[in-house]
Image (cartoon, rainbow, N blue to C red; front, top):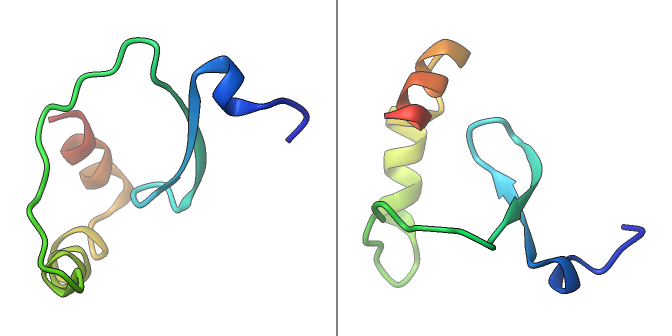
Length: 66
């Protein structure tokens, strides 16, 4: 990157829905919900593989915006 994300209050993250990196501004950020996971994360990956991964792009967008 040509700039320091921390200096601009930005976090780089992998977007599981779009399958690409995205820059997220944390100037005004609110956590709406989170999924509890076990120590190894297997419960999250099971949910992702069975529920999110098979969704169409339109279904992912609707889920993301819900």
